[in-house]
Length: 192
Image (cartoon, rainbow, N blue to C red):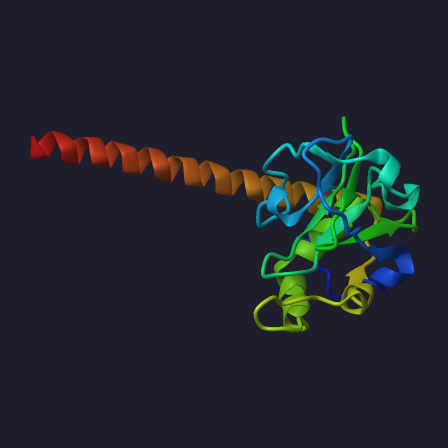
């Protein structure tokens, strides 16, 4: 496993531009998706296919997300980073997100998102939250997070390890569900 401890570290503000998401009132129909925290799980995976609920004509071009933008959920207890991959829809981030647009070609967006989701980084970020009923992370906190500068190969390796770990957890969870079903069937047979 790579040791992140001895690597050169750079602050997020040195490798990216950060801004807050857009405040908008969603409509029933539109042509731009208004991304909100509810569209994601705790790890930043898109769990629903959001429908377009803003009009393109009402949005400034600068607010549109581009593939590779990292969105960071800064409000509430569910703080995560996710990479906007683009796809078949135009989107803007809501005010519950910071939008991080990488400006340094040495950093892969998925690596930045992984690092912001990394347990130790999350503990630090959450320790800086303000507010009790609706904790909030300031943009300054994210700007000053120090990220180890790894080679592309090392960044890709970290991303791959993280993906494999998620897959392993899913498989273990599915095995547990199957075991539970089998035990319930056996108990039902014994009780009949």
